[in-house]
Image (cartoon, rainbow over all chains, first blue to last red; front, side):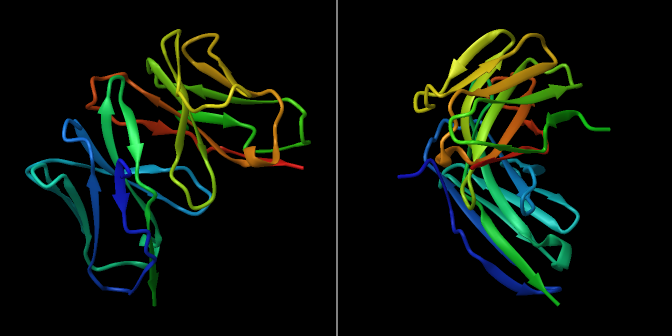
Length: 110
Length: 114
């Protein structure tokens, strides 16, 4: 079983749509969780951290369910510029060893 | 302002010809990481330095070495590149927390092996 699993997609959605990505992780002792965004042939960039209480940043909402070892990302009112690969990332160890999922590709069309 | 800088952005080398990739940071972070990312795959951690302490991942080939002469700089040396080493190489930095912090990535060096 992979340490961090994501649906690779692609998700093809029209502008304005709401889209949700899910991710599961295997290590129940994992400490912290993130969503990164990666554009084609670019480096990963931190999109947001994920907290147990859930957190929102504009059109983006992230949720964490520790009991189910499940992380989600919701994007509302999709824009063309949201087209990218979204990486689910779990921080397992000292010092901050990040475990990456393979990413979910999102394509927003006009 | 760029905080994690990688040079060169694109590197072409010949099969078996040694190559060195460079990373520098202005964040004064304790930890520097090197990742390899192949097309449509997740970044794969090769090794990291916590200050001067080197930590190799168990499955990193011996062909890959690293040097960290000071806090700001870290180098990735590929002694004898093979065709399978063609990839994006990402440098990242972190404060070195206890599983609570994130990492900051440089723009990457795309390596082509002919």
